[in-house]
Image (cartoon, rainbow, N blue to C red):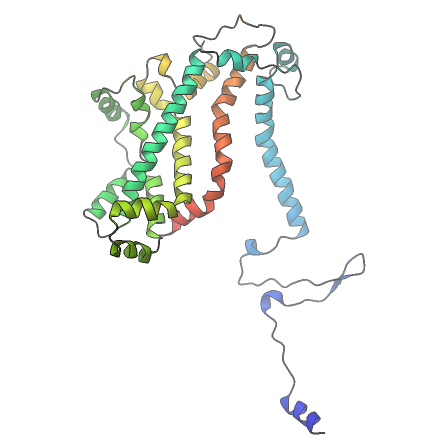
Amino acid sequence: MSVELSEAARGPQKVFTPPEIAVLPIDHRIDGLPNQRRHRNPNRPVWEESPSTWGLIGKFLILTVVVGIVAIPMWGIVVTSLSDAKTVQDSGGLVLLPKGITFASYVQLLSGGVVAKAAWVSVIVTVTGTVIATTVSALAAYGLSKPGTALHRPILFLFIITMFFSAGLIPTYLWISSLGLRNSLWALILPTCVSAFNLLIMRNFFMGIDTGIIEAARIDGASEWRILFSIVMPMSKAVTAVIALFYGVGFWNAFFNAVLYIDDSSKWPLQMVLRQYVLQGQSIPGVDFTVAQGEMNTVSLKMAIMVLAVLPILVVYPFVQRHFTKGVIFGAIKG
């Protein structure tokens, strides 16, 4: 009897149910098993909620259309570059179904003419420019990440203002010419060596590193160079990889500086060859169209040049893509 009184004295027990998991009336599936729906929290953004079945179907359809828009033309370019002259002629110019596969176009382009030299020039410019630009950006970003450094604000302002204003085409051309860089590969590297946007991303990432680690290294006697290369850079692999990718893509795809400063066709980058031949239809020195006429034609050669121009970036990008969230987004919002 005493036990019953003690339980009654406690009163009714209330069960707290959070609003985001409050259970609504039970729906019955077709198989007879209950399906409990959860009430959406009004304080939570819609995009953070789990999508419904129709939402998943809609996303799948939209992504399929987008991938098809991108993948089908790329597939046609690759297949056309590997097709012989008869297949290209029968298909009207763009081949979608592989037939009569041949590598004659690639052999002809890479056998030592302007295209082969342009590919090497693009590789040299991209590798050299990426290494120099990433190194300079990292050094400048580390110095600007310390608010107490000398002339911190004026130097930072000079970098930021270049994002909105430039000297103009004619002053830049006169500057490059006065330095004696015309018809030099340095003319393809130095004018775009440092990007203020990339520098600011690295600076903000460096500012997010725990200062206690850096102060501990200073107490142990480490110099600023030792702190940068032994502590800061190993902790910044994500942002460094992303910035290096940005620079690499920029140098690989650049052609306008070659139009301005390079007159010697032996120093053209691959994108310049792509512009001259594919877009403007000019002839390329060193490409003999009389060779293997039964295996290739001009369309196959054009598509092969396009594949060579795009393939390196497609190969490198998947290895760096996983660093985007940690590198760019964190570096863009911190600081």
